[in-house]
Length: 85
Image 1 (cartoon, one colour):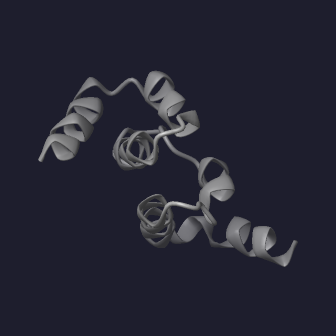
Image 2 (cartoon, rainbow, N blue to C red):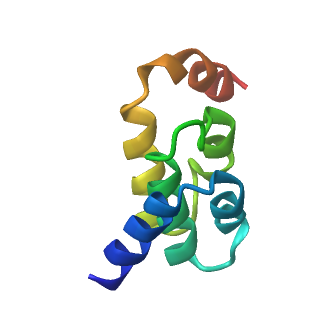
Image 3 (cartoon, helix red, strand yellow):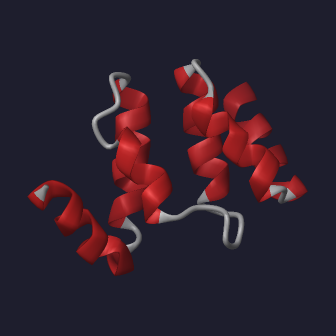
């Protein structure tokens, strides 16, 4: 419940730049919350933000990143390039 409330607060504040700092945090919980919030902040998240985390060690972060990627079919071309190497 606390994670959801904090994520909602980040969305309501709407500061994409400050929230994006959470993507660099050591804590998987912080990274996951930052991804979830940025996905709902207009202009807050790009496919380039996701790419380094597609193979995240933490399964919850990885699941969140893939969930977001799946909701953004316009990123398909960039994802294909990433996997093609």
